[in-house]
Length: 231
Image (cartoon, rainbow, N blue to C red; front, side, top):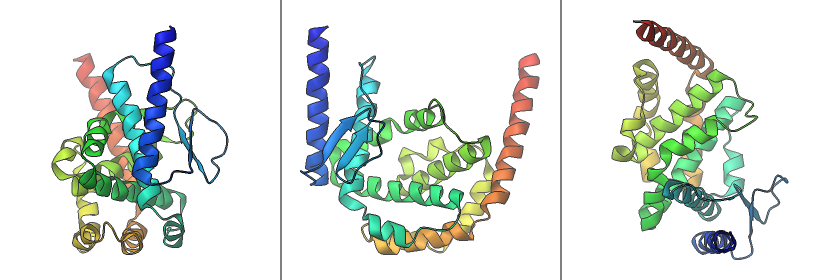
């Protein structure tokens, strides 16, 4: 028990050291499992009580890597300037910014890309199954699909397999992104331009209509699965 506890503490220290090294924010405090509101100089990570598998270790590393990249490459003031109106639009905008700084980090740090890409599916499942999560089904569907769709554009071969067969919404998003995709890719390191362009694209998408389409499709798939199980 003592040996496991020592290992956990060593692991936490290593994670904290990695975050400070990647982010270049030496004065930040890394906290595990805190429920307090995040002060300016704190990074909050999930509590680590033990490791059931290697994938659990990789998952924590991926979360830590993503937070470190956010601190290093995402300017909160620029982020706020271009934030679109509407709760769902804000969620999609946040997803896009996360993918932007994770893509930059994946290209600059060897271990980061491996950690983030290897746990992509697990992280999405966790986000949909957090206890007390106050999201309706339509909201979860649209965020999940947008995350998968954008990762297919910027991480390409790493995440194309994660797009589900919802051809209608992908076709609509392709239309919205076609004109400015090259501009987005060319300005990954220019947050001001990237945030401005992605905000414009998200604002042009009829999100509410697509949420309804996604819900209708998911209901159809659910009944098809019931029928198949009966057969």
